[in-house]
Image 1 (cartoon, rainbow, N blue to C red):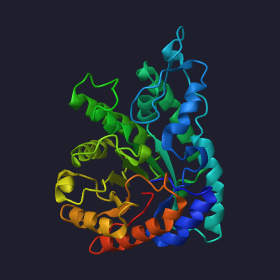
Image 2 (cartoon, helix red, strand yellow; image 1 turned 90 degrees about the vertical axis):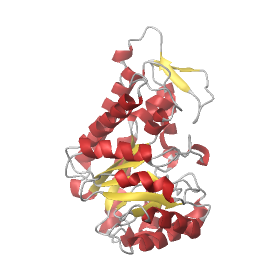
Image 3 (cartoon, rainbow, N blue to C red; image 1 turned 90 degrees about the horizontal axis):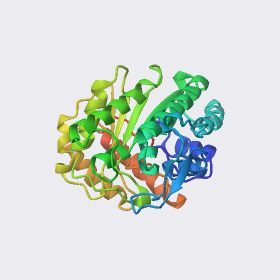
Length: 346
């Protein structure tokens, strides 16, 4: 998906290219350093904002700390400065380009930039005035996306939106500030936002979405009953986009090697040319567990690639060789009778 537990971008690019080579279409920079716990690195930025203040910790999924707009500040006037995503991408891109020129990274491989949706930051870290803060955060994030797409050639770039907290809202883990308490309107609001973000990616740049049920502390915020919500969001986004949708990634919990989990994917309606990736790879049960999940998925879905459920990060680096080996083996087994390609960073 994006995260790899190595020291820096160069180490990530070298390791993935060496271990997975032609099996991957895109390689991210690993979200190393302060980004290693997904959006948690945005919390200090919010806490340091002059218009925001920290409120009491809340016993919820995630860090449990939130911010609110300070008394006397007009929420509609809050603006955000640099978030760090453009800076990180533009620091990693020259490293990628150099290694590709040297032949370390295969010529066909694109530089992937993974970005969180604004919902992730706003739902997890703000207490009130989410409508105004979401609008401001989205404006800044899209400005950073524009910086990235202006600097990295379209034929070398790919962009992925990471969508996890959208499902936490639907599952009632976090309160939603839109949808008026109606599940169908909440779903519509989520899809509308995801489509808007996708449309902001230039047409010549491949676009993907990583759908997720969380990985904070190696745990989901809830265990998905099956893929019903995932399929509904995916279908809504695919139908709403006016530009190509190049790939979609769905999580598969470790213990779901039953066809019932995958059955709602029979109703998945993806455009021709959209690659589906399933998170079949788990560190804790290796190739045998992956094969069980692969067999169950093949009962329902014909063509797909494989990935981990939520990236490679937040794991000891010593687990990487085994994870890479499992990826490679399952990728080849999934491709037997299927044109799908595999990637740990779809």
